[in-house]
Length: 316
Image 1 (cartoon, helix red, strand yellow):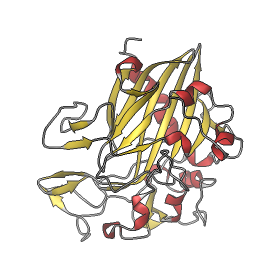
Image 2 (cartoon, helix red, strand yellow):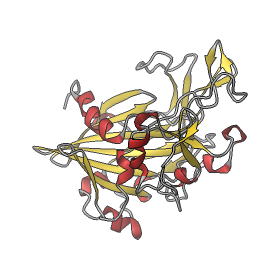
Image 3 (cartoon, helix red, strand yellow):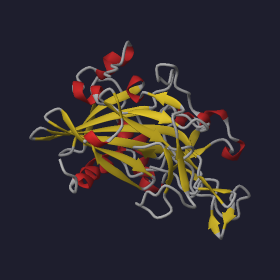
């Protein structure tokens, strides 16, 4: 994934071709974090169905840093902050920029417990884990884009010819809703390196909140349940050789455990609505997981000559 600021600038263009898409507000400490957020950003926030057989749940964003170390070309970055936190993560931009990988200190092929995240409770909250970031970009003239960013510590790739392709540490997904004068117009669903956009009126909802379906392992977000083939990038088919699978497993409400931010495109600056949530990490340019293992690494596998497992990609 591109840096958060570049994703925020780029995604609205995807709506150019569109025809102009039950409130559950945070409580307790989440109320303090959400103070000042436009009410419609919360009342129309998506709810996410996690796939019933997916063992990799949403994860705490900050905890990822305690389980990784920054590397460039498989070498630890000299001069990196210790400990690395959400308040100093962007300092790595001067020490390697987009070539920095937050590399697991554990052998991820052993499936350490931190990769599995936190299962939402009966209310949809990931207790003890801030697993999402809500970012509001006011473009003026009543146009507001709200980004609902979802974090998972691990992406389990699709199975092709009996082998997983595309496993990687660190997985960012998102929805984006375009509002006009507080009314939702359209919604974007991220899927791998692309996605789909729909008018708000066209998508499934719970009350007035749109529903997203998170695919098993890959966490690609879809507007409908069932099987989605993505063999051809940008083309969503009901069946094929590389399939994402969605169903109504566990319901996650991302706004119950989230950071809330404003983004100013003119200055490329983020600010926290509560005035205290970390903002430095939002400018980090590197990847959130391991660099692709070389073919000589015993953890790397090949399918039809393609490096298929052990972190084919690490998102940024």
